[in-house]
Length: 236
Image 1 (cartoon, one colour):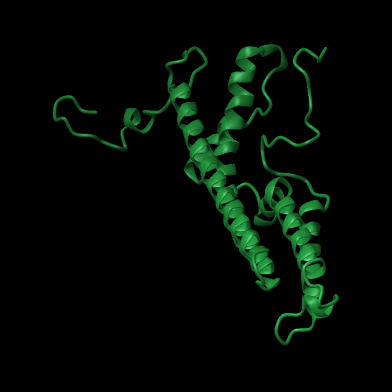
Image 2 (cartoon, one colour; image 1 turned 135 degrees about the vertical axis):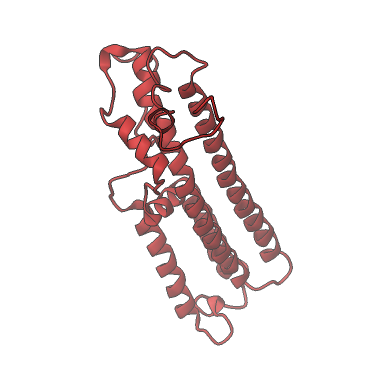
């Protein structure tokens, strides 16, 4: 910055390196790193809330359709419509989860290599290249996980149990609530035979289960798994 003219020269050495030294170790809780971390936490929280809203929509829609399906003499395929709606919400939530993971991965990178090291320097940092990686991610943000992995995660956590409830409700609807017909006739939809409808339902749930449960290497950084169980003070 030229103090004589008051003009800004973006090619000047001082101006080019204006960000150098902002994240040094000696800087305390009020440092730029702390403000950066708080900003990333806020972004992560907002995207987490977006995920929760989609789940709330899915549960509310499913409950409303199930209530209607078992009222009076409504057709059984209303429950299958609920399954389709649930699949739409799953796709929306998987896309949002990929965005959520982008911000969450930055938070975990800072936690692992800044705050964890500050609390216990004896273990060192998790990734010697963390500053370069974070810098590159700020310059060119990139999604860290595939769409299929996001689908699998949301299926395991939320949508596979909800889909199982719909499947059980549909089976009950075409068996216990249709005394005048037997399966597979009770599963028919207009001109589509009951066996064909049942086959389509089986394929739909088979694909969903395969996507959710197939062995994979998880790329989502910092996501807790059911196997990640520990007790405070239990480590030596």
